[in-house]
Length: 190
Ligand SMILES: [Mg+2]
Ligand SMILES: [Zn+2]
Image (cartoon, rainbow, N blue to C red; front, side, top):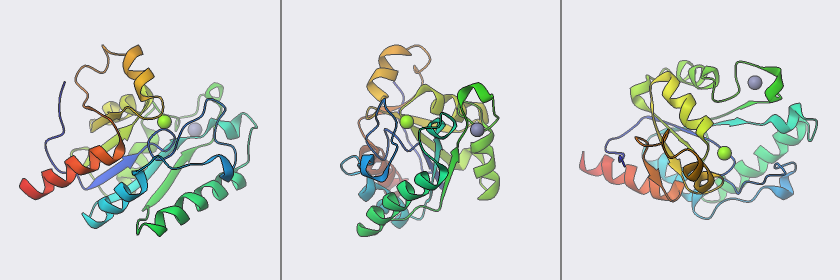
């Protein structure tokens, strides 16, 4: 199993299962959005470390007609309000609203959403770390040549059990908070 051993300037977070608790029934309203313990403080820590922090999330619930883009906006406002309470903020939120059958270019594991983010923030793959709980997140990162970490929260444990072979060279950590603590030590001692 590999380990994260250096620093990054841009951290791209998956949302469901990394920042907030995931649900097989989708997160369809602000009331269903609940932060994972420690994740918001971890984002605030990344802000203080000088990293750019953005969210890149597949939200096929929109394409499936389960909730509207307006509702997604309200969910993200709740996320940002709760983040602000602990002194954190996001530099951007990017999402794919499409149904998997739409075959769009932005839905992870396709790399377009991540490429758009790197371009927008003028970062190289080397400067970028992707953190996710699904194979799709890791594959998208691999496709653009940047490092990634799988967290065990959300679908992480399930992903790890199902795709052990594909994930052989990918660092695995318990939570976003654990990843950020390690990044903090790397920044201090590298
Ligand atoms: Mg996820
Ligand atoms: Zn899309």
